Length: 491
Image (cartoon, rainbow, N blue to C red):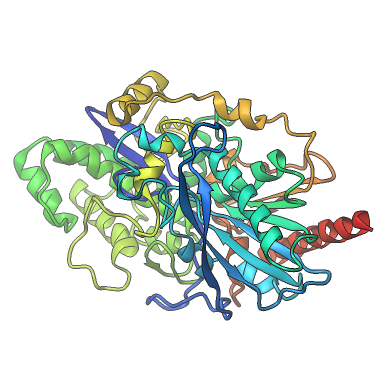
């Protein structure tokens, strides 16, 4: 989600270059007002626990350990014939994920399940070196998906060893976004630990050039195009208007006032401004849900449609166009009416870990993005691995290994695996890097036409489209089969 802000896709300034950096968003709970409330599905208390994990699972000389936080809720768990639903924590505070992952809470009784939410190392309270965890690349060296998956495997072994009745029960991995990628990879790497995985909005094919670099922004643009006539055209035109207005001191001052920014614009801040605006359009595509919610920001139902009310005519004067852009931005940043100005250094919640993800995006999680300004509504941007790599080295003293993830997890060659459900919403830009077609009878794709980012993992509401209701039924059907097969084979 980037070092400047916690975003699904970050345009981050590193040195002189502006680089596109992927940032995966994760779960939030539906909120039918504009004030934060707990997810209504979370009706049970959970226990907050800690497990002593090795800092390095793959060497024998380093004996250092750290406390990994995890949460357990067992209200509906049955020792006989029950199951364990294991949330593969992503890049943020695990309590936030637990309180905002309604689907797991809603199916717990039906599946007689214990819920376990495991915090990802280097996020939340699970810091291997405390306040020094982000000090430099030496301290961050153990922040990898492989280490995180090993944490999960060790934690499950600990739970089965210490909780009476848990030893001989099936475990299902569940996650969304980066957590969904981890859930899928967990099943691939540790099939003896988890019997199956639900990988929601998991762009495992966004890596290493497996998906076209421009597909993500094409889907964002399509969402805006579908939500209002000429909406995407108005946004496409706005970039040149900003460039022209920012070429003079008076234009910079006018932009500052017209966009109601909290601090004065300078010419050096224009790349940051444009990145912030682009991030806003991307975030709106992620959370284009059919009901009002308060995930990233308090937003109305179908927020892109609301935004596009202000962007119906791209042929207005330059100043009117930018005033309309402000009104559109204001839907995202000030729908509750409480913001006195707009801050271009902030776009979303503080529950996600920007520093850790910035490092991961410079090591393993290399997701090429590009735009051409024709098939999308953004300024043209070419993917340049060398520039990206140099920017990463300047920031962290490390260079990416873009091919490592396909070496580690198989890329598109995963048909030897089994029992993974990949769900994707057609409105979700990350679906461009997701598994959207069945690979085998047990590697199954579920597509949600009206779904934005992992809509299926959110709580049930009266506003859910029929496609997401059906997807949840199918997901539970698969999980029931995995559980039944486990017990059949155990006997």
